[in-house]
Length: 366
Image (tube, rainbow, N blue to C red; front, side, top):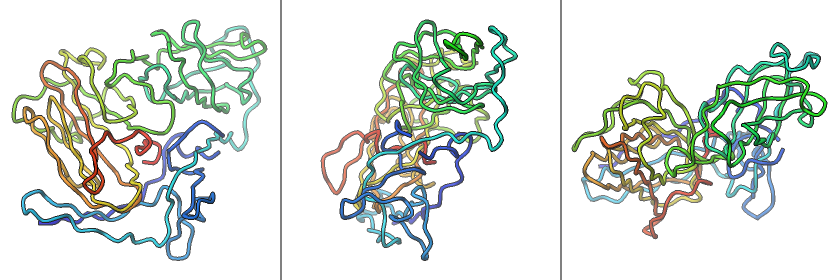
């Protein structure tokens, strides 16, 4: 039996995602501001590359229909012809800029370390490993990054772009597990404010890994008692607000237990829900294989393609996808010992199975 799932258009990006338009550090994330390689190899804007009913469409609105085989009938998945006559076929790079407020306030005077001159309200994501991109939200930053410094201990982050209420910065690779400090003014020392809004994670090969750009997955984490043999992941929407949010670059994860990093955890196990947009290079039959020490579920455009009970080890299924972007959710519960061990591989048209590259995953395009 074949099930058909219709693709859907992307929603408006929230927070600073709405501002991501043009500068130089994000790569392989097909969002607003993409420079796209056209079918003939020439650069095209998203509006030139994709059209719908004669009107230019955003590069982030290229999800296509999918059809899937449920693995019980022995039928091959049906191939779906793309519905748009033209689409991006490659990504050269993504440029990013943060637009300043329409009427920016005057830069507050530097008053020698007074916290009232600047404030830090939150950091997104709230936890990150060294080398990751984070957004610092607050007030009083100004718009001259040459007058700013963001530090963790003695290590300074690389500011990518900023305006008075927001700073995009890449953490130093060896960021200390300490409060972040924002300095502003002549010599970047006149005014400062510190904040504990960001948890610096150790690079561990699992949930603690560098995510330096728009590629990868958003992750929500909850405490868990761990999956017993035969268990499948619970409905993550019923778990409530996650006590910890972070990002990972891909779905090849292996590390020691992570539960100690999740607020409210009383043991080593965790439950995770990871979301992203998967970009496929061409229309093909895609086999997705999930391997895990716990329970896992791989969902594409709302269709549960693979459900792996704890103790089974691995499971695969095939879907026919056109070239484009597809909403993907991966739910995962570690075993009771908490060890993190999850891998999702893909193979195109009976080719060799390999890990899904980070460049094909974009949290930025959700």
